[in-house]
Length: 143
Image 1: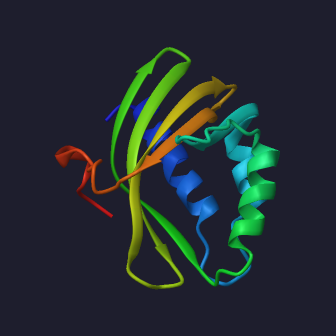
Image 2 (image 1 turned 45 degrees about the vertical axis):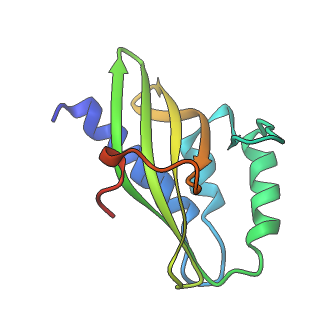
């Protein structure tokens, strides 16, 4: 594996670690902010699609996660494409809330830009698996 792909995979793993927590204190929002580009936007796909900034996402997610004791988002599989200073990572995940079973699975589509010596996420959009939308077979393993 080349160094750039390894660095991108490390950036994705760090994003999953930043949003996950087990101590009831919530995600590491500061780490999330460091991993995201200052002009980044991200949010879920859907009928009421919006593309919030990092700060807008943090504000909304902090309210939604305030009552949780744990939230664990685990990467399953990923596809990485990189050209020069830009990259796209298509990564599947599963989420476990409050130590229960898997509460959802889905795919994050992340666009990265090389910012100095590191990769920073410029945009992220995700969709969630449902009865009518299954994860592709090659994106179901791992985690």
